[in-house]
Image 1 (tube, rainbow, N blue to C red):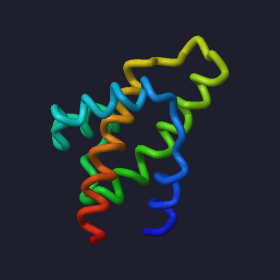
Image 2 (image 1 turned 180 degrees about the horizontal axis):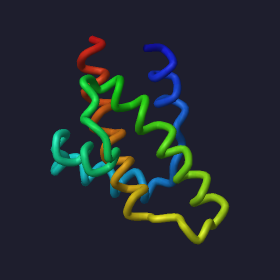
Image 3 (image 1 turned 90 degrees about the vertical axis):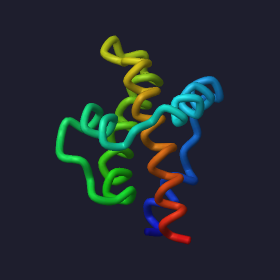
Image 4 (image 1 turned 90 degrees about the horizontal axis):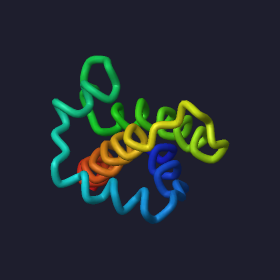
Length: 95
């Protein structure tokens, strides 16, 4: 649990990217969105989802920073929406 929490606390992304993702959390539906984003079975817990989402987001962030031609802003925002929503659920379950 500490590892996930520390990784989440260490995330630093541009404000506009985070703001866009924060707006998206209002329409986030775990079952629908995780299936689409992860392209695998829906993880049983927020922690399991975060363990899958964090490396995907890190790869997208690396692509963004290096101006990789395969970078997708829309996918990055989608993944950040899921990260924010799953992080909220993770914190609630840990409390």
